[in-house]
Image (cartoon, rainbow, N blue to C red; front, side):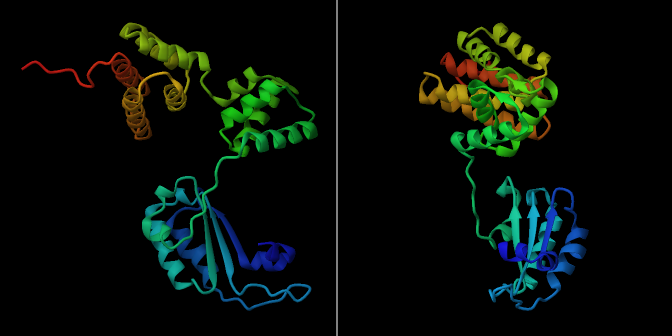
Length: 280
């Protein structure tokens, strides 16, 4: 890539970058991508005599948003023009890339950034933008962004627009959509008490406050993993959390799913059977 970037005319003729979440239909594959991939290139030389690779590069960002038909069409394009074109797929969920396409690629997985790296870059941005971020707010930002620097910058930008140059931990939580920890702990404590009415009240509070239930499940998972309970209890609760998360992705009702998680967690924490016996 540095080779192409050093010579602008080569970059324009040899690199095609598309955001697949926007350009994701089969027509884009059949026209724009196929036409670009089909053109042969020579082995040019950059300044200094360094050889330029005899192929082009197509970069598809958010490739997991492409339709299945488009991915199947792209597979044929890759096979046909593999000698003159290289493909880069950038995605969040490799499971959404069809197997024939994924099997033709070398996979590189990138871990979330460490808190040290995140903090260093955020402090640099705060210095350049003249923002005041104390140590607690910095730690909160690293935590809620989960190692995603782009997400951290988005939260920081939103907080700066709403609250000015002095940003607190509370400000960052309010713009991020993260559920306050005391709300998560209150629901877990209600489940642990064995009182269904109390758990139902906490579930209603979460829904009434407008907190995203998917985020609630994510944070509840962390609480369960760190809780002083048996491995069997953790397994039962985490299994139901995963099932509820899948149901939410499929469009299920948030209140019913969270209430079901709470009731299942209560049964696990109080050592009740997973299913109540039915009377014949």
